[in-house]
Length: 177
Image (cartoon, rainbow, N blue to C red):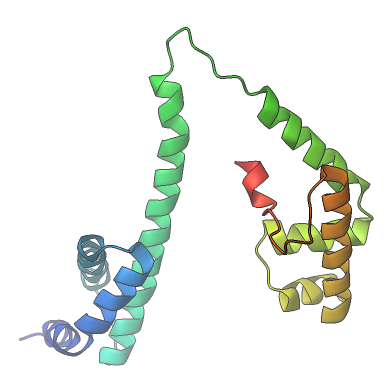
């Protein structure tokens, strides 16, 4: 038996439950998890590569699972953006005016923010960077970033007529959809 076959057997025997749990965490479905594990195993072991041990093999498979899952999400997002255009053809056209107005209001409100506050808001809410990463990217302290985010939320709430007293801040990303 070749080394890679023995490695696959060891991986299945010892790591399959962990890989399945990881797949379930990514997909939220047992069947999709199983498919993801299988696809990743095929992708990893169909190429000739030197994998030193089972732990390294599990790492390769996990990374491949993550990549395959993210690729499928991108494909799905792209497909969902194309489907409405493919299905269109009737005389009905939805009214997009409220959505356009909201986007316009948000764009104007964001444009009114001071540049550093706007940058902090964009990096944190649109790029999903943690406060520490925003601070590193901007070359400022985490406390300053928190202050910028607080000021930005308050200014946007005032400009958009939102109430921050409830503690429920509408996510800026919702407006992009």
